[in-house]
Length: 117
Image (cartoon, rainbow, N blue to C red; front, side, top):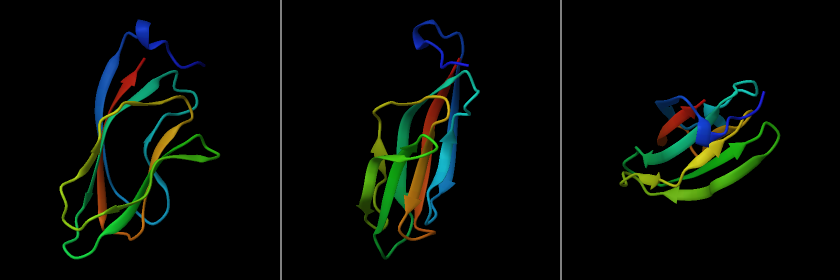
């Protein structure tokens, strides 16, 4: 199967994914290797929910073998207005958007994305 041509795509389905970031990389949005679809990540919003300490966070795209970072070790200040990324990222078949926090229980993330078929 191949990723669809977005110019001729017939279906766009909107989604939100939410997660608490742990201390190991975990997929927030995944595109199965046989999906015949494209995932267009529109927004990534990161918030430190603790009142006392900053926390490092990393966001990466994984192709199943390696991580390619959008953010690496960004310090998010305690109780700060969320960090938001609004530049589209496209996940092809077999790709995942992953997050990792320096300390568990400090970082929450919301991802807005579309499935394109």
